[in-house]
Amino acid sequence: MSEALVSVKNISKTFSANKGMFGKKKFVHAVNDVSFDIMPGETFSLVGESGCGKSTTGKLIDHLITPDQGEIWFQGKDISKISDNEMRPLRSEIQMVFQDPYGSLNPRMKVQDLIGEPLLIHTNMTAGERLKKVHELLGVVGLSPSHGERYPHEFSGGQRQRIGIARALTVQPKLIIADEPVSALDVSIQAQVLNLLQQLQKDYNLTYLFISHDLSVVEMISDRIGVMYLGTIVETAPKKELYANPRHPYTRALLSAVPIPDPEKKSSRIILQGDLPSPSNPPSGCLFHTRCPHCTEKCKCERPQPVEIAPGHIVKCHYPDIQETTK
Amino acid sequence: MAQTNTNLDQNKFAAAEELPKAQSKVKEFTKKFMKRKTAVVSLIFILFIILMAIIAPFVVPYAPDQPDYTALLQGPSAAHIWGTDEFGQDVFSRLMVGSRLSLSCALIATVIGTAGGVVLGLIAGFYGGFVDSLIMRCCDVLFAFPDILLAIAVVAIIGPGMVNVMIAVAVFTVPSFARIIRSATISVKQSLYVEVARSLGCKNSRILFVHVFPGTIQSMIVNFTMRIGTAILAASSLSFLGFGANVTEPDWGAMLSLGRNYLNTAPHMVLFPGILIFLTVLAFNLLGDGLRDTLDPKMN
Image 1 (cartoon, helix red, strand yellow):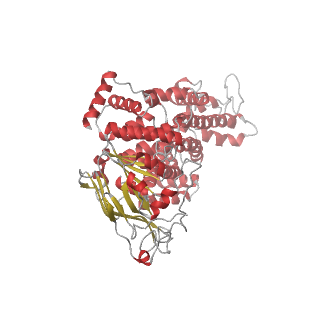
Image 2 (cartoon, rainbow over the protein chains, first blue to last red):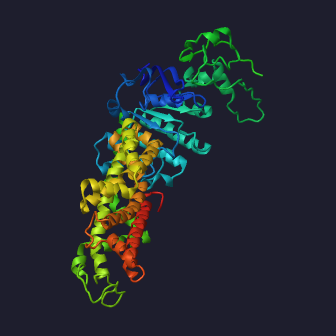
Image 3 (cartoon, rainbow over the protein chains, first blue to last red):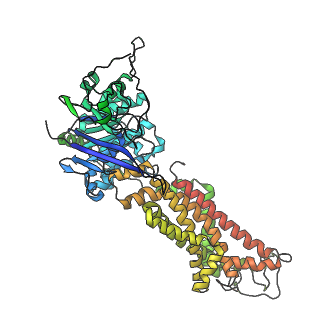
C-alpha cells in the first residue's frame, strides 16, 4: 500500500468553557486521541452524532485550529505545529467544502470572484486567465459561465454548494475536506451533489475526507469509514466490512437506526439508553460505557485500546466479539 | 492524475480562444446608481452647492459684505430675491458664498473623523483583545462629553480658527464611528465566509479589506451622511460662539443664529439659511441611502 496522504496521530483538542471570573474553568474535550490515515484517492468518512467532534477534526486538519496534542502529517510533513504563514502555501493542496452553502459565500462578491479567489491568492494568473478558468469550472459543476456575473443570493442551496465545490477545485487540491456538504440540502439535490463529488473524484483523482451524520450518504460515497463517539473514533473499517460486520456496540446501534425503504421488513432497532454524556466531563474507562448494553466492570475503569480484528478493521472495545441480541 | 488535468485544460483552452472580459466595477456601479432617482437628484443638488462654493464669489449679484443702508432687513424683492439682513447685505449672495465655509468645514471635518473612526473601529473589532479595550475605553472618555462641549474644549485648547473648528468637529465624530464600525466588524468577522477565506489561505490584510471592510460600508455610509448634518450645525454653532469663522464672514450657521434676533420683523433671515441647511442635510441623507442600496448586491 502506498503512503498515506494524511496521517492523523493521536490528536486531541480541548476548548475552555469559561465559567465567569471566579468560576472553575471547564474544558470541553472536543477531540480525544483520534488517529487515522487517509490514502491517496480514497474517500474516508467520519460519522457520528452532533457534537462528537467530526467538524473539529476537519478543522484541525485544515489548520483552522491547532491541536493541543498529537501530530497531523500531510504529504510527509507535520502540519500540526506550523504557523499560519507556513501553512498558507499548503492551503492550495487542502481545500474545504462547508456545510452551510448560504453562509460560506461572501454575499458581496460575484460568483466568479468567489470561485477565482483561490487563484488570486495562490497563482499569478491575470484577471482574464482567472475568469477563463472560472468559466471552465462553472461548466464542470454544471453551471453556465453567465452565472459568474451573479451574486450568491440569486442561487438555490444546491447551486451554491456547487459554487463552493467549484471554488475548492480551482487550485487542483489533493485533499478536499467536505464538512457535511449535503446535510443542508434536499434529498434529491443531495444525490446530485454526491454524484458530482464522485465524478470529480474520478476526473481529478481527489482524496476526500467526508464528514457526515447521515449513514446512507456515507454508504454511498465512502471507501472507509470512521465512527466517532464523544470525540474519539470507536471503529474504523472499510465500508462493506463495517456495514456487514459492525463490531462496536455503538456502530451497531447507529446502523440499526438507518431507515429501510421496505414497509414489510421488520426493523430491529437497538435503542440506546440514556443521554450523550457531557464532553466537558467525559466518563471514565470506555467512553461508551454509560450507554452500552454490554457494559462490565472492566469497561468502567479501563479505556479500551484499538484492536485490529480484521485487515483494516480497527475497533476500540473490550468485547468486540459479543453478538447483539436484538429485540 | 496530472495528465488528465492538463488534457482537460487544453481542450477547454482550445474551445475558447480569447479570454473573457472582466466588466469594469465603476461602470456597473454607475449604471446601478443612475436607477435611483432620489439619490441622483440629491447628488445633483449637492454638486450644485459644491459648484456654488467654488464659483459663487464671481457670479452672485452682490458682494457678500457689501452693505446697503437704504435697504435694511427688507423682505424678498426683485433687487434682493431673498431679502437683506440688518446691514442691508444681500442674503442670497451671502448664503451662496457662505456655502464655501460651511460645506468645506463640515465635509472635511466629517471625512477626517470618519477615516479615523473607521480605522480605529476596524482595528479594534478585527484584532480584539488589549488593542480593542484600549481604543474603546478612549472612545468612552470622548463619549462622556456632549458633542458641542467637546468641540468647544478642543478649540479652547488648540485655539480658535476655521481649521481648528474642523479638527474639533472631526474629534467628536471619531468615537461614534469607531463604535459603530467595531460592532459591524465583529459581526462580519464571525460569519462563516470569513472563516472560509482563512481556509482558502487569505492573508489577514486581504480578509480585513476584501471580506470584512465591505460588510461595514453600509453602516459607515448611513452614519457618515447623518454626521454631515451634525457637523454643519456644530461648525455653525462654534462660529456663532466666536470660535470659528469671523462673525462678519458669511457662514450658514452664523447667519441663522444672527437672524434669530429678528425673527418677528424679518423671518426671511432665518427662513432661507434654514431651508438651505435643511435641504443640504436632506440631500446628503438621501444620497447616503442611495449609495447604501447601490452597494448592496441584494438590491437591484
